[in-house]
Image (cartoon, rainbow, N blue to C red):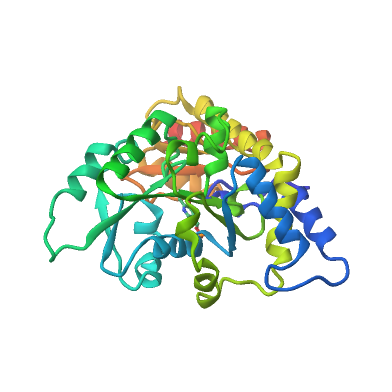
Length: 348
Ligand SMILES: *Cc1c(COP(=O)(O)O)cnc(C)c1O
């Protein structure tokens, strides 16, 4: 496999990991039942229940936008609102899908610290207004790992879920990079989800080596009532569901999900370390997951682009985001770091 063209723009630039690919091939034998009544979907759901050490309800969607939006719509009436961070994917990168699928539930944006919501920020929004003219807060949504690559600790999660309980709010977790958070903290999925008070988790597969697919786990099973109808109506019920669920079996059965998350995190740490002493380059946030955010002078960024590197600069002036994937090669990380050093020194 060639690694020469590996880029760091996003962790979804990567391809499909061998475990997911192999499971797809195994599922591609003969006929099986459709619409999720197949053996692979049952097995994948069982793997989740085993991994999370609880009897949760499991559903599958094509992508994170659908998973988040449908999960939130299950927790809200149209007159309710969802409190989320100012940089939350559901707020900035889902084209209004959460509002669309919930028939208008409004997202209320709270300030974040290092990408994380805090009990104080949640309280501020939730208690701001109590009158009938304001969309009634019903859910808090947090992202683990966060959009800027930081990770909530169990005590931070617990403090948030305690606040939610006190205020009568459900807790949703966007886990597009949940695996990276587990890897960083060496904690079990249960400890970072239901044991910390999370009601619903959208567990990302795409960025961890699958072609497509996210799982929606309801730890609070009552909230999953009729959820299968919601999925179907939203065009998220795959008729050949086994090809959406089998890759999960591949990822979960032998721990590949953790192996790859650890690898991606390790590559991010290596990149951060290699550029840490480059003058005029600063890490913008602690590197806890698979993303490295650095502030680099604009001219150097341009030069980096002309050397063929792809990356996003949508966050903060002069900042660049580099994401590592399940298959990122260490050699490629070293090349990138070397080029960052070179362009910065050239443009000083
Ligand atoms: C990638 C990502 C998603 C899912 O995005 P889709 O493109 O809809 O699959 C959700 N949340 C976060 C934080 C993400 O980074």
